[in-house]
Image 1: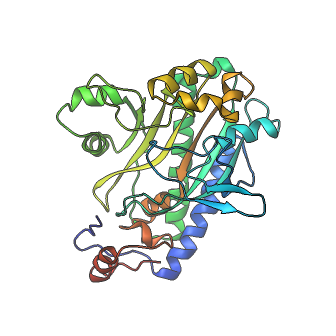
Image 2: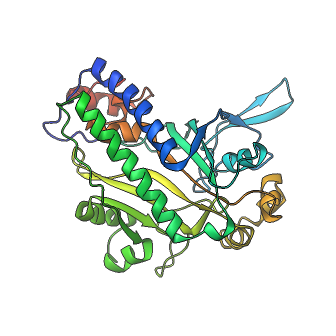
Length: 333
């Protein structure tokens, strides 16, 4: 449900907001490519569902599927490009230390609509080839710090252009595992734990998402066939406008043949072993990689101090959300 903070008003006009969004996307992409040695590539909006490269997210979301008479097949609009990117690195012959980034646009029809969620998803999807011996916490930690530096550097340049902006971000990242968070806040829900630790530390990378904790439940769902659940995580910043933690990125070192084999069994997804993409992974035919997605609209929201994602992207909303925003003076694009 949408809740607009009392007394909220945008620091920028609609025109200024559009110009600022353009600046953010230009500045941050350049900083990200420089920090992680990435090259921008073109990516698909639709994929062939029979290959197994669409993102299954938590396993319950329904992709938008439609028939394509010209090829006598069905097609799916992507949920994300988590698996496609790894295949692309193989196809394009990327070498270790080099990677790709793309503008990913997706439709998630089952998304719950609120201040941070829309059925339209836009993010920078990136992926980088690594060596087998680089599948370590050290590499993951270094990569997270580089991304945070790029985000904070983008904010610095943005505030120079728009002095009225008051957003402040913490450059120092606190790293914590999902089990450590459950141990510290056992009576809280996972979402409440995220808010509690991010309120305290301001910038947090929450490690190890997907596997069951001591409570018997995972902190959050994660598809078993792209991230290694022991080498992944979510990046949160504290949002002063909304008074909550905002997840900006989900990322991780990708599954090896061994961890894929284990996670498919743990998640009850052994049927995926027969799909072409999964067979290539299990046979060791794809490069070892690290990758993730960084929300474009969410980053714009955070840096611009916006209260609703509809202030930085054009989508469709339920009547209640439209009315709440209208009553609060929030202008949806």
